[in-house]
Structures are given as structure tokens and as C-alpha cells.
Image (cartoon, rainbow, N blue to C red; front, side, top):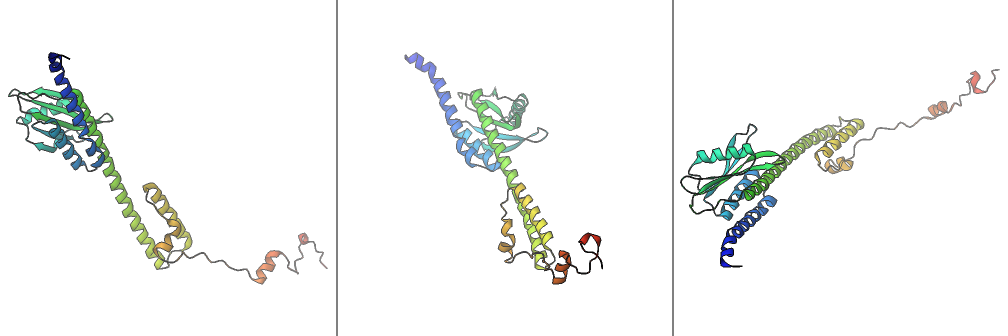
Length: 256
């Protein structure tokens, strides 16, 4: 390859190398970070450092698609109005955008998307005159990767909160059942229904409940079994149909 061809391909190789490094920098964040705030801060820092730009700002969209700042790294944009305008346009158009700055440098924005939902916008900027803005493909990939990580972090937080609520409800029910059993004011059928209910709650919340040993493990004694009445000799005789004075026509005897 001639020196001229090498010079022509150098920007392409540099852009490809930057793309790979930027995407690889997010791998640990997306597999380790489970907290939303930590994920946004870490991903933004890695993107800014890897691309070697002046700074960045991550914005989140609420239910009414109003953008608010969620994470910032290094120097803020010198034209915050232009940054917010570009972020809004990127969110509305659902694609990354780049804008050259009149004073030199550039602004870039990419929507944080997952499953056709817009969660926010990643914005980065560089004030250097000779700086080259990232490719739109790279910006789109960064937005999708961070958007997916953000969605997973929110799902994890919801599951954790749901599990905490279920455990609190379960603990309260166990406490009530313990008090009833200690007062001996709960009969076996009521206890059995309570156990069945707790089992259903446990399965719904994926909380492991060893309810077959519920009383033994928590209270140290089994539930009272229902009393079984032993038949007396008289009742056994009456139930067997051996009464000597029965003269009904259907018993096979002829009255004297």
C-alpha cells in the first residue's frame, strides 16, 4: 500500500479503533452495575474518557418526555441551550445527531433506546477545532447499549422492591400466626388454611417457604391435630345393626 493510500485509510482505521474501544469500555458497566445512578455515571465517564472528548451529559426522560440531567462528566457544554435543543431533536427523531459548533468543535446526541422506548439522551461535546465527531453508527450503538443497561437496572430495582414488600408481608403474617398458635386460639383447620395461603403467597413472590415443617422450625411444636373420638361398645353395637329388639320387617325377623 502506497503512503498516499495509507494516509487515506488512516482516518477510517482510527474511527474503527475508537468504535471498538468505546463499546468495549461499556462491557463491565453493563454486566456489573445494577444501580441506575451508578450505571449512568460509569457509562458516561467511560465514553468520555475513551473518546477523549471535552465532556458529556446524560439526560433522562420522564413520562411526559421532559429531559432532566442525570449524570455529567468533565466540563459542561459551553452552550447548554444548544445541547438541550440537540438532545430534544435526537429524542424526537429517534436517531443520533451531530452539530458543528460555530466557535469550533461539535455537539453530539444519541437517544437511549430499548424495545422501541426512549429512556433519555446521551450527549457528548468537544471544543477542539481539529476534533472529529464520532460516527452516527457509533453513537447509535452507544445509545442502545446504555439504554438496554438502564432498562435492566430499572427492572432489577423493581424486582428487588417487590421482593422486599413480599417478605415484609410474609413476616407480618408469620407473626400473626405465631401469636394465634401460642395463645392456642387457632384450630387445626384454620392453621391449615393459613399455611395454604402462605404457600400461595410464597410461590407468587418466589420466596422459598418450607411450610411442611413450618411449626417445627419456628415454634418447636406441631399443630394440634383434630381429636378423634373412639366409639363406645354401645355405639359400636348400634352401628353394626345387632340390636336384639329390632322387629322391623326389613331385618329378617318375624315378631312373636
